[in-house]
Length: 361
Ligand SMILES: Nc1ncnc2c1ncn2[C@@H]1O[C@H](COP(=O)(O)OP(=O)(O)OP(=O)(O)O)[C@@H](O)[C@H]1O
Ligand SMILES: [Mg+2]
Image (cartoon, rainbow, N blue to C red; front, side, top):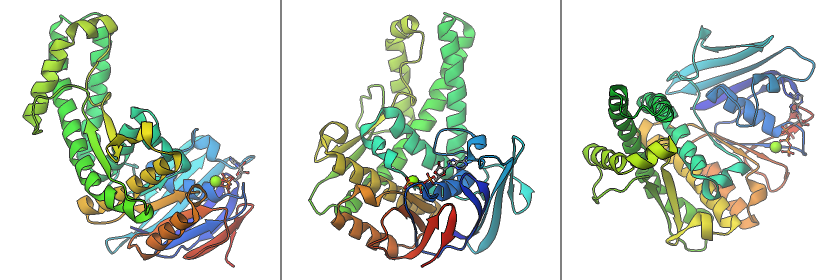
């Protein structure tokens, strides 16, 4: 996918912007508070339907205005798309090629985003790691999104019955079975994705960090499995067994104690858990490598690259790593947008943003 044009109106501090990025690496530079992240955010919002920063559409509206719009032209597999988000008087409308559309549409712009907060993929809670996988898998596979939605709904129902102490009811038996089926569909897809990602991530890490280190990533299921092999059947039996063993605990705690909502992803740096043992800089480089690996894994599964958005990634890296990353992004086949407060050293297609307005130097 490749963005050819971006138009913004009344989007946060950007009143009116018309931007034609290049096909490869695009750098958006400027002082603090000028609109770099806002510009990147607008691309993410058009793709995902929500912002990666807290808040709703109302927060994206320029102060004192009552409507904003984000319009992006992009090409994808030799087809041209125009996608537009209009927000007016509290109501949002989303169009692809002038037709009402959903952000879940296959034709929606696809993105991978890296922000300074992504350090928490490595050092944060398991929820952060699960949402890292879920976000990309939902973009890659409508089936996964469907399974995940079903799982969330069934989990809610199951937890409600546990709260109401109705575990002996017939309904609970039925819900429990659907819960296990939905759970294993989600888990197997996550495991397959993580296995693909794990193959790639180690090599990327070595490209950015010259210190030799092995990065291993493993999906950590929240219940014991008595087998080295994983299949739907094996997962099904293991989860069923775990639920039976935990029956008393679940009744006591009134909540579901195993399933993909508890699972984690273990990241090892030289065979030690990165969240406990790696330095802050190493954790950042691992997080960045995982995002880059996400780009390649996406391509491997879907046959095309999404757009890569990187917010303030340079300020977190030492000079050598900055240089290597920029070099790599320059020669990649995908389009990337990178924001940076630094003017130098800059390569790629660079624009400067000042008070919400773009200029090229
Ligand atoms: N809804 C809004 N309307 C108008 N201005 C806003 C709105 N929301 C945020 N801003 C302002 O937009 C400006 C630019 O914010 P942005 O986060 O894009 O800055 P930045 O260039 O990324 O800066 P930094 O280098 O500090 O990350 C800020 O001054 C911010 O206060
Ligand atoms: Mg910023």
